[in-house]
Amino acid sequence: MSGVVLNYTLLNTSPMYDFGPTTGSSSSAALSGWQLNTASSFITGDPGANLSLPFFYGNALSLFGSAGCTFDVSIDTETTSHSLASGLIFQQDLDLEFHNFTLVVGSDADANAELVFDYAVITSTYDLDEAPTEVIYNSLTEALAFSEGWTMSSNGSAQTNFPGASVALNFTGVAFAISGPSGTDSSAGEFGVYIDGLVTFIANNTIGIESTTLYYLGGLNPADQHTLIIVNDNATFALDSIVVWQTSAESVPSEASSTTSGSHSNVVKIVVPIVAVVAAVLGLVAVFWLRRRRMQRRRAPKLSGPFGMRIARTLGKQSPADTVALENMPPNFKADSKVDLSKMEAGASGAQSS
Image (cartoon, rainbow, N blue to C red; front, side):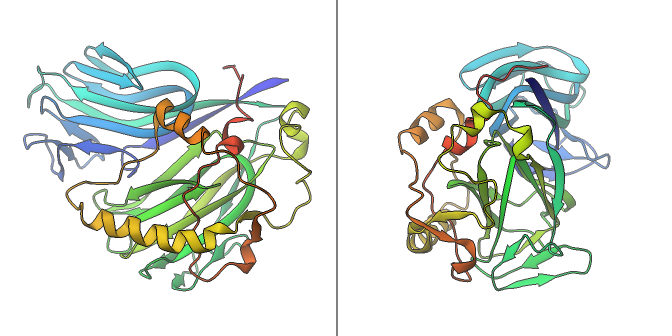
């Protein structure tokens, strides 16, 4: 059995990142906070400016850019200090689990000593006998189940301004990525991402980016079939594609397959909790309403880091008996917020870097 390494490049334009205290568009970092320059780099010369990636799965994280000043990096509960660097400015091996990351610019930063952030590479290792296959889905793909309220384009993209509009995908794999515009007229609002009940809300307000990674998540159990649901808030949202790192039954070691209950290899439709049909309508309305009362915050709190994952594990597993096929859901179905991480970590536990 060999460990399969997946390296994913997450560009600085992804709305998964939080930039503080402010972001703007400028050719320099003379203004307060972070600025996006003409070379698509985020730069700052502001002491105390911060960058965070609140929720990611992997066993290594690498940051690229340049540092003309000192900076501190916190991953979960550990903080380290770093000096001037160029190219690879930070790299750290981690336990293979979920983490949160924060970078804080040092007190020596100024207009002549800036920090530039270009992209991060998230590394995750899986116990697989062969590498997963990268499969791309778009609106021309029958596998995507769209609710009402979407407008489809001939290039495979889809757009909606319909509150609660959703799109669902059933798949087997270890990771997925959602791509589309961010901070444009076609995609300026907030959206929710649900994977097997785990929920994260993203504020899609990066500055005028025509195409970027809207969301990426690894750590899914390769032996399970998963349900991904994307839900629009009440503004505009556009989807270019969904990429899945797909696994086959042959690629999954028997140890991982035995952790699941029953055989899923020939199941055509994935099922999700029937309680979601009722609970999601009430739950998401309440969540969106509360979010609008906190407009000064860029995005809602997320379930992140080891502490959050420990809380999630106490919620228990969903029962396969209480299920309903995706094709039977109401047009504006939204998944509930019940967390079932049993499908997410089983395939990755014990894996080592190769």
